[in-house]
Length: 156
Image 1 (cartoon, rainbow, N blue to C red):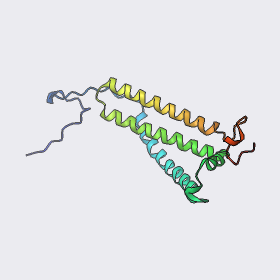
Image 2 (image 1 turned 30 degrees about the horizontal axis):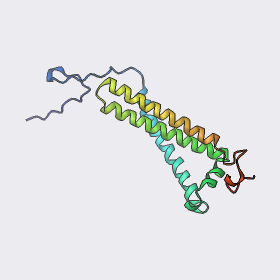
Image 3 (image 1 turned 90 degrees about the vertical axis):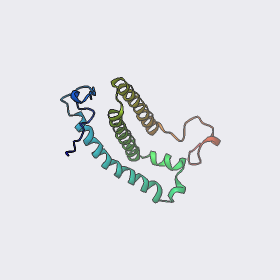
Image 4 (image 1 turned 120 degrees about the vertical axis):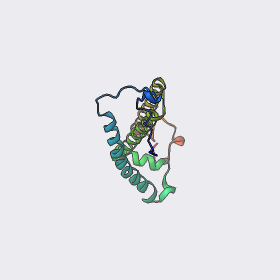
């Protein structure tokens, strides 16, 4: 008695009554680059996140020091703005690519797959744009604000 392994759903095997329609694969290397991006961005993200956690939680007064003033002081330095920007972009792109892969694996209809990916890409773009704007337009001491509303480190 020989055991046989059934072909995957993407395999077109009409003699067994299984026909799973997927768009024919293109000759591009997009999936390979997506796979490589996940590995490389994962390595870089581990470094970015652990340095972020170390600086925010271990250096100085620890977690008690993380407040509005801490973030304002950190983002006053362009190095930390770029660091946090890289962390934001890589995390969002890494997560988006992972969810894109899950959508490709589990959404059976082409139209469902298209709409889910459109929503995913739109949400990711909004988060990346808003996060980037927050990082680069953050001003803890806006001009024209009332002195009692400003943090203590701002000069009135």
